[in-house]
Image 1 (cartoon, helix red, strand yellow):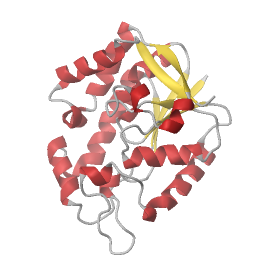
Image 2: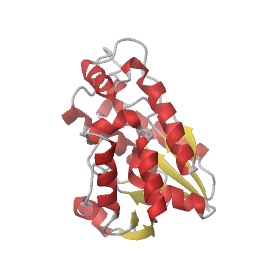
Image 3: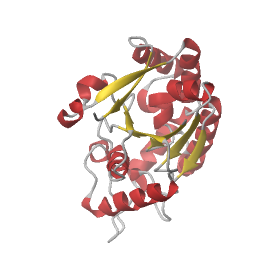
Image 4: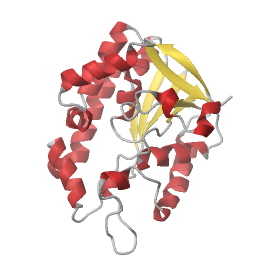
Length: 243
């Protein structure tokens, strides 16, 4: 079986599904993680907001290069292959007229996709149509938490008209069944077991995204505790599908 996970950013699938990806690879399945917002920032200055994130990440302007290298290590630990698309992260995108940054704060980043970016949905959908194999299990983020790039990926994937799986966006959501939108409550979930070994590999795959740990946790020990607490009640990872 071939599984393809759509990851809005370099870290999202590792954070949300790392243990499951490893278990699937171990069982003999082919697993690939496709990072959508993996493009380089456009030429020119970046916003003060993006600069503040670079400072927290300790990456300077080489953030994409650093994150790409972290992703390579993370995927290697999981045993997954990868593919990167060319859309830049929302923090780098600009209005076509005037060139001012579109998303310059946390509230703006966790909002609806701007009207000026609706074309990105069609562009991404077309790219996926040409890139996806005829037969595969496609896994898409639920976009819990409302990050604009997660919304972009889900909207584009749903325009494919394919039956697919959805994963909860951890750690934006730690109680996904409570956080589902009303329309998503019609979905049913399937629990995929993750072993203690899978849990440890999951933690290591997240640790590889070193620049992003500070976004959610104070240190890697706190990260490991959070992942174990998320895993513990069900000893696995749930994926959702519409009936």
